[in-house]
Image 1: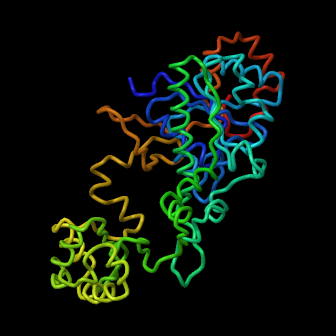
Image 2: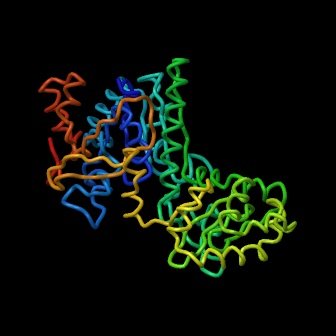
Image 3: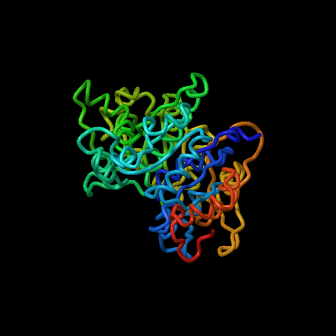
Length: 404
């Protein structure tokens, strides 16, 4: 069995952060059933351009492989009844909605514990379910600014800059998945579930880590650094070779020794200005020009090859194409391919979460409501019960391209 093959998750998720969190669980074998609101066309991620065909997009495929889909309108009596039947046999209810919505639509632990006292209700929201911003929507870009990330990113002479990836969304998804698994462990141990109140805001603030500790305890004022330099370790930054940029990271004193010896600058080891991390930090304006002048005399490939051979942490600044074709990327099995009716084959990066020797199996993301038949069969509904629910509007009016 795959690690999470005995875990059943009912997920009210859409777009990026929520589906990103649960896709790792699905890759590990969890049964993740996406509940898609029918009148709006389901997960908005289905419609993200530019690589889109009808109700499917490469964006959607990225975050929803190995999952199932059911169109369900929780605002109807029938839709609510189906949802509650699903909860009775589930381990978790997972969602990424605005902070006030889980309680409003009745998917918190207090709302569901009478159906299943072991249920874990994991709510990934923008700002959490409490606090003055609870009712506000939260988006990665806004949160990178609000949590101080953008004030730390970019060139000192340039504007505040966001990360090139939606790192608040993605780290928030990881935090939600971890919280859900912690709740599931406790529920199986104690027989009682509960709420996981997880937010993108909490995640972003938590990721401030040691700069926050430096500020809170010593008044440190973080700022942007030239060439993406580490705030305290010198040298640890991007350097320009004769043709391109690359990274050198001396996070230990032994790496500093290896670096200058490989560069032909061993005399720097006898200079008291550069004797240790503290000294090099104080005299970085004296040291860095010396290193920059030497690095500019050879190509980036030459420096990276020689420094790697000497055991100095280093690497090129790859394009996305170069990163995806790196020898190590392929050797680690980080790209998988699934079969798809429209796209033919969809290649994508896979979850880095691993356990055991068995390799994950991947299948394409589900079409909207694709798993209707198997879900109602699992619930034991009679044909008449199904027809009554359809008539009640429990499953909505399917849009073109959906399945019933």
